[in-house]
Image 1: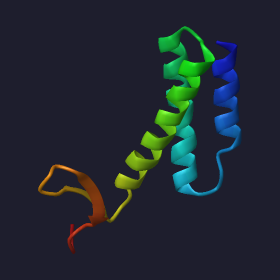
Image 2: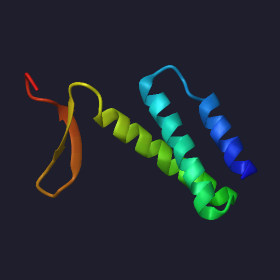
Image 3: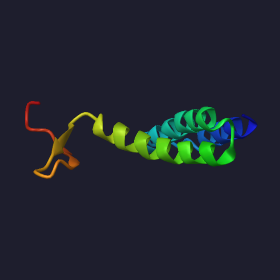
Image 4: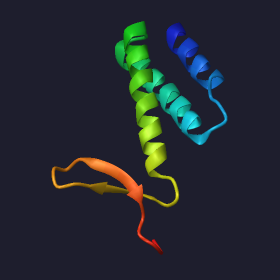
Length: 87
């Protein structure tokens, strides 16, 4: 559990000025906490959770920006592009 607290503290300390970096730090902190709980406080699970959470935080945060919409192509892959005018 001590490792999880260290990772969370590091993530929050590294949170920078831009929104994307804050999204990554928040996702990393949540992922580290979830990884620590799931792995019983082991460092490997905590680090994996932090990495997955950081990536997820950036992707989710970017998709929720005003003017950005999430689309799917023919193969079902998601991508983000500008929303249609007036949307």
